[in-house]
Length: 217
Image 1 (cartoon, rainbow, N blue to C red):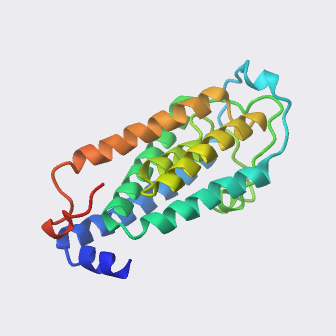
Image 2 (tube, rainbow, N blue to C red):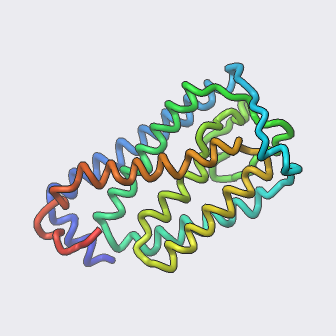
Image 3 (tube, rainbow, N blue to C red):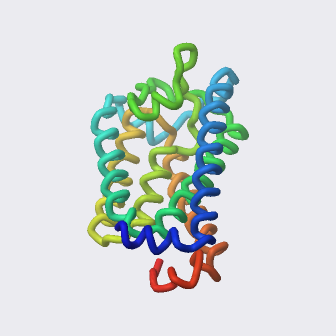
């Protein structure tokens, strides 16, 4: 890993991309959390979801948390040795967060009936505060879009398969807990795939410098 990053950081193009990506990603995240707290005060529409109606709500918060962050950590450890892939992954995730901020703004929803709030210590640290507990960040699911992207950027076939299994499991559990509507879950992987393809498209002719051309996406 140190050798790969030393080689990548020797490229001015890569250094610029990396620095700009980190700054923009941090800015997008800060604005995302800020606006989700503001959107919480808006009235929305509650949907009669035929899929959720078949699932008596149950609290799977701990299971969802373990699946989500174990997958995130595993993919991170396998991807960090590929600087090109790592930076593009951050760009993809930034696009997903930006798309989610916009979609929550345009699609104002009330939480599903009998919703059991998802207790995620990491998300809670950034998203909630003493005055606002956010429950209307619904369309589309951030947890599922993140897992789907982790599957797409995974370099190891076994990790990729695990990420796919985790995505499916968390999708079911999140709906079972009535945290999201079924459409929130179903649309999330599509947004991830679009973001994935878009970033690869804009980088189709460059890899941050000739010395990185040996790294295959």
